[in-house]
Image (tube, rainbow, N blue to C red; front, side):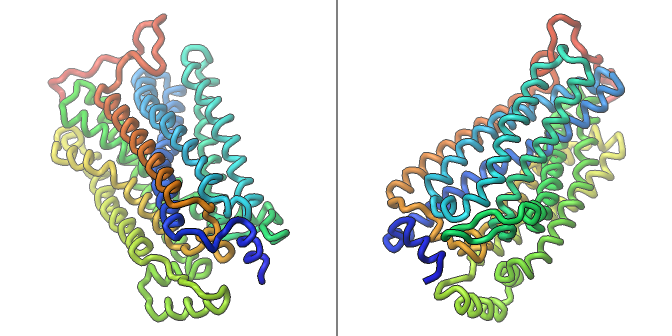
Length: 442
């Protein structure tokens, strides 16, 4: 009997584990992690955008640039605040639903999560608070430094999460000890190709999400003939000119990841390519190596997720090129209302692409939680289907409310536009604004 088999038998009465429990646990994790990822994509991209906008405002000292920082910063703070709550909620399920994972690989898997918690909740949140409440209290260079610390720690937070996820997809830097895994090589774990490629891919996707969001919100105001047309014309151009290079970066690193799959996860690669003979051969090899079982991931989720991601990227590629051309001309920028509608409708596309790509990445490694080492059925806690069902309903309801509240707040503040009240407002001074240009020039 292998050490892993002895370990899984000792954890809980695995033989009595109802298959429904495993399915419900997977569904709960998919909904909560996917819901949290929606916030992360926009937060990560907007943090970098706001930091760059404030750098420009700090150097140029123009009131119009400062207003741009405050408006887009307000939307960033809303998304960040609700996203933090979803992250806290999601953490609870590891100990509750996945005790097999935490017992078997917690020494390796849990270390980067612990570092991420320190980075995100202590450093990033502290400096974000300093940025929010430091307007007109710090000098402009210190205040600029606080938002850059926020942006850089957001990148570090994303990296540490992907260190943990990269280990699950391509376990390196460990050794087996006492029926579980312990950390053996920190450098190998941190330089995991599965982590580094995914980090660049996610960073590009986050900037793409932020670019489409800025362009869509700006297009809404231009479509309505807002008196702040100059403000939103500039913002739309920033979003459009950010989106295209971010799209190329995301697509390029996504292509490299697909090439990496052929050696790291050949079964996922074969399912994605629809290679039936290769799938049968790999299934036979895995049965010989690991024992009886179905080692073919769901084609509907794996291939479907990948195809949805590629279709979304194809649509965004055509839109991105067209957007750059149309934004270059003043007439189309301000007056092409059909284009404005298209920009508004395309805001969900980056979210769709990132969520479907995540489904492809996670569903494609089944039946493994730690690829080649720990099966999903052995990682799930020994809960009853009723308890798991109640947990799923609770988590799903809470996440649905948080997502709805977030988008309601974002849309509410986005519709209002830049105002003197709110983030960065100082009652002691005159409003830091520039009068809009005459409507006749619109």
